[in-house]
Image 1 (cartoon, helix red, strand yellow):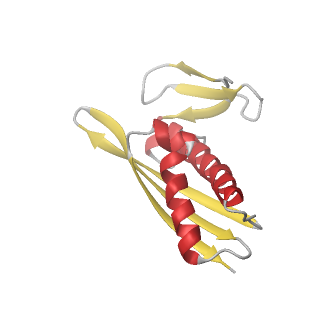
Image 2 (cartoon, rainbow, N blue to C red):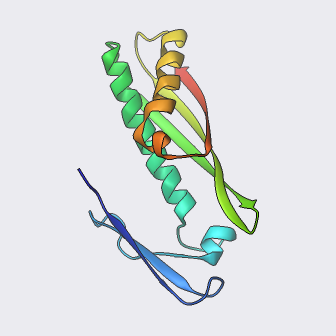
Image 3 (cartoon, rainbow, N blue to C red):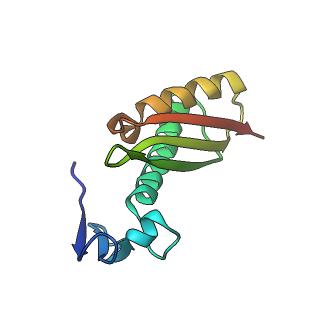
Length: 141
């Protein structure tokens, strides 16, 4: 299976503009640029999109792990905070912190934590990242 996305950029780094599109059309020429990435300007940025992908991947993979343990979540809500730091002459994504809150009937905290930690390491987006990935997982009732 292969999925695709594309980006267009015009101009220099600070004043140029770009757009991001996905194969499915969920993003269609979504704007991005220097101010949306390094300041609080309008538009999206690669770190935000990576965070969305990681949160979605983790949530789905957690559902799989829970299912393999005979558990079904009523809800799984995951937030990913992606850290972009100065690295020498450039920048690097150095960390992703996942915060997950899940309602899983009949789950105990120990089982949930074990499955969540395995999911953190095993979800496909986690596997592709070199950054340090941390997780706070909370089983709610």
